[in-house]
Length: 114
Image 1: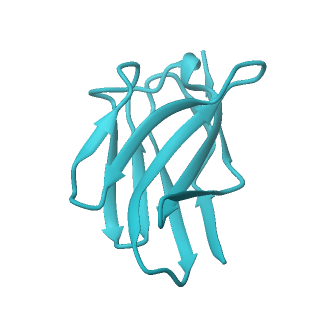
Image 2: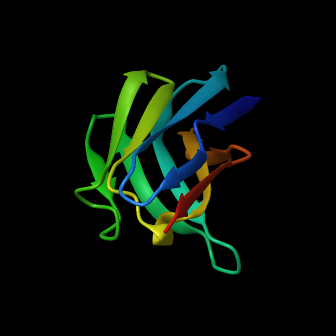
């Protein structure tokens, strides 16, 4: 009922930037927050950034100061990634929390070359 789609991934050199987009579609009573996680090969998924419905943002320490999550509309967020490092290489997933349930997208690949 809720569909989440990410886009904007790609290949970038270390120090470069990318902007990821996430759009949630469907009908719902309330969207609580939207969130970005990432998963590198062979590793567990980890939290990256979250934007709450009240506008507050939270970031993992590993990306703080480099990544920025922002809202375009009530159901669309961006993740601006600056000063990218090879360690940022991962599949990035977006979720929308609707009625306290997380709906996840299919992910978008980000590859940062050395």
